[in-house]
Length: 508
Ligand SMILES: C[S@@+](CC[C@H](N)C(=O)[O-])C[C@H]1O[C@@H](n2cnc3c(N)ncnc32)[C@H](O)[C@@H]1O
Image (cartoon, rainbow, N blue to C red; front, top):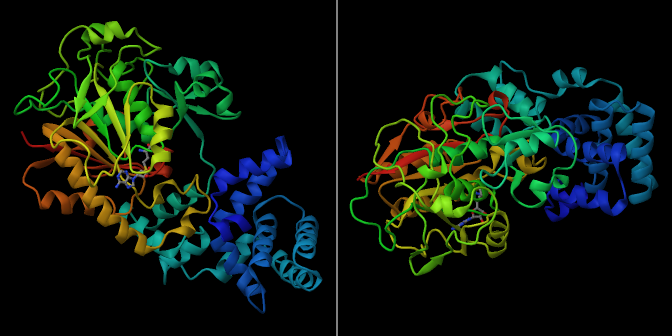
């Protein structure tokens, strides 16, 4: 708690390290984790109650201890005398006897009511101030509640469901990278199939790092919506190129422009080379499409774009033999319609990130991709060089509040405006990097309209070379994605992060 406050630490990175250092395991580790994450999530509610129960503002260390105590008293099944006693002891050891006396008095007041009794006292009335009410009851900043209401556009009840979903512990979701691993491998390790993605599996318990496919980066931990937006990009039939792409006669070339730390790049890299092998699998919710055989796959050979050499497939390991992938018919192109197709493989990926250490992580998660450190706003590649471009733009991350307990308190409305400028600039360079007939996926892990629809609308209004596709057409297995043409995932509807996808085609 102190590290999060003083050093802007990330609880989900620091907590596992502290647990290892202190040798906490099993139930003790689970309790420590719940104390930290639950308290950080619930700060908005607890601070409102602490403010009513204190006659002065507590100093920061005491305040954190009171929040820990409030979480135990109001949301955990810790007996009140134990919650008060351990918290007061902590304050005595860390701060001193005077502060311990103060903490004791505040905690006893907090313990005098249940959470349900406190909420009507501390939260504004729902009818007078709906966003203020939800902000206190569900512990989110008010501006975030308003932004979610705007993005959902469906009223208070559903907003409350979304906020409640943000406070629940997310399932650990895994992805089997096609050609390198299979979902069967994950199911054999005890996972359950995901609802939508043919490559996904939920892991109810256990350490994902102990699964061989994950330790070997053939599979990974990845939110299901992250998997689906990457797959959607690969399923769009491309228009014919106006002229041959410079430097490459065969095989598609893909760019992941903001690839670090490499979640989507890891999946795109596998689909690029081996194809969307599970598409139409009887095991999944897809309809109709044939599973592409190795013989369907096209492309191959090495490609050089913008003066950078992208590694060839030769010598890669795992999955189908690359000799098969590199032989066979042409890559499907020119279908032009809205029907999703299973990508047959034989493409290659260039992955870029502006931060070198994040680009290094991408190199660890991908097996075949070329990986470079590059600023997407100052392209290191030629215009029109790519068939498909993933722009998973830097954003507020308001769609992933479930997994980052403190994240909701870190952002402010000013960061939305600042990121909006970068998002527009990156989307323009992503479109410039795409050849006529090619497609760009604009993705954010935020549902905030100023980062999603408004960015896309502004950029395409100023260009005459772009048309927006209906992204939902490329996710036929998922319902509840909104009115289109973009697709918006939601934690309470889909059990995923609130990921946004717009698909933009460069006019031929
Ligand atoms: C939302 S994250 C991408 C997540 C990634 N696609 C994944 O699935 O793991 C955004 C990334 O954009 C990178 N970034 C920020 N500004 C950039 C720029 N101007 N050019 C390229 N990358 C940038 C950040 O370093 C960060 O790694």
